[in-house]
Image: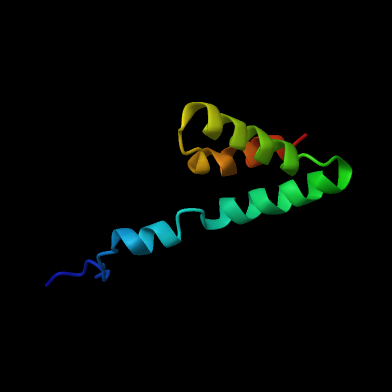
Length: 75
């Protein structure tokens, strides 16, 4: 007799995974950026720098925008 507990697993689609990719960290970074903006307006600066990089290089920097916001949130 097998006494190992059974755990149900499910496949997750790429689209579903994309919807949760930010998870708790994404919300936390947004909250910290908002708090930092109340002290010194940094989110506009981050957005401006991101737009400049996209314009000069043609690279889509959307993936690193959250990272930049998270890094500057502690300032």
